[in-house]
Length: 361
Length: 128
Image 1 (cartoon, rainbow over the protein chains, first blue to last red):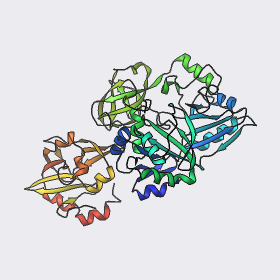
Image 2: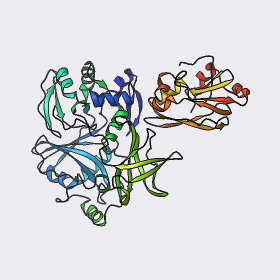
Image 3: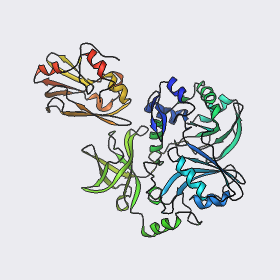
Image 4: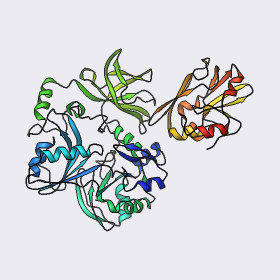
């Protein structure tokens, strides 16, 4: 599938590749340059491939409370929370963000590859009077990310953006079109995720890129940026046959409420997670890659889920799923990478700690 | 495609230049462009004896690692140490300061099996 911005990417000579069923831009100028510009300036990402659902009705809150791991009832209008959609076995169908847009109106933002399955699952599990709409095709999503995002967006639109706290959103008219402006992102930097009608995508893209302070960035940089922040990527850290407890160590799961998969997670919690996600810092720029085996001396203790050079750190890092016994910081491990053994050490996450996402702007 | 006529090319995207009887090896402009940002280079050691087609180096980009094969047989007499700190030289100057290693060729006839620029240009987009 193609996003409404496909032709713009071709015009910019982007390198395109398949991702989650979509033909997406991986890079324009280059991953390292786009990574740097996001950490120091401002980047524009086409994220139209992700899915968006609207749920409305007086039972929508209760339905979502039962389907999602994060607490929904305490969300204020304009607030969002990140969490998981689980099956009965406590395995992750998707990781997603849930916004409360009105008293009985909720907005879910889901991964591209899982949009169809999520939609089917949610339709099956909502009350008869809850109205579910998959608005993915009609919705454009552009991410404006980087420390100068606010200045750029205000300059381009001529508007003063509302004061939004992190993980809060508000409707506003930008470039004459109503947008949901959300102070969230997947880079660790200050920034916005903009949701608006897909028919306006090209106009917004061009208007933003006409400003000298913002340049396009592809999914390649999005991946190195999120890896430095240790944000999980569905299909790498999260899978439908993996529970979230080992991945987020219980974060984003509220056991004080009832939700699908809770019993399975409680049993797992009782037994203790056998494998957990850790951050590994390597010694050089030579990277480990997904599926490389992690060893303690000669014994296999896990595997890499994502790995690459961390451009902001100048050294390779990896996320790995390893036995709980070897998951403490400073634990020394090795990684089998293409026939060589790379030395690695378990480190505290995130890898990159200078991000501006939560800082005042 | 930037392909100097005086070089010879392997299907696996290495180039060779013979200078005073020494074979200088690197990867082509086409290959560096496909790899994009080179982030790490693993070179052979001086003294290694390489056979034609032998895996002898690795070029890593943000997204992937690619093996480099010896385009001719011979002993490694020098490696480009600058690539340890500046792997980006391969992107910036693939036929110059981005060279990878020098071999003393065992058999200059190995060169006959390599391609000219014109031949490589035809096959490069389809080659591995």
